[in-house]
Image (cartoon, rainbow, N blue to C red; front, side, top):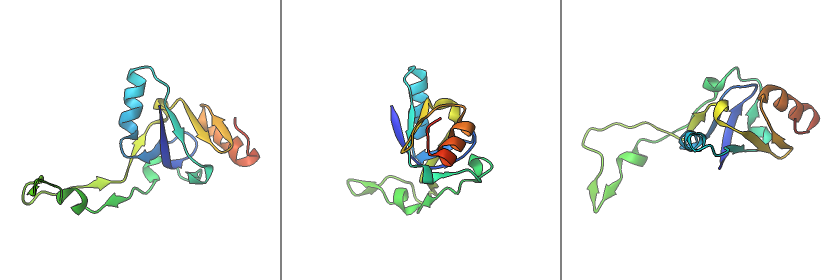
Length: 122
């Protein structure tokens, strides 16, 4: 199983991917299926201290609050919503990282450093 990654903090911090990536990673882990994160190295920010430092975009609440089925609103009147564009997946759920320089295996700190400095998979 694989997911496309949007942003990643380097050196062991969680990665940030398309919403539902974490759920897919947990399902893969429960079923003992490898889970690969696929992304270009420019999306990795080695300067970020951890995954919590990654800015998460929120979609406008109207994106979900305006949903209707057969013309009837799904959300009750006065409802509020938060719609993050991404979710965070811990490295422990990821089998390997797939980048343009190759497949990177844990521990990710050394693997990412080598990918950046030498342009080679670790």
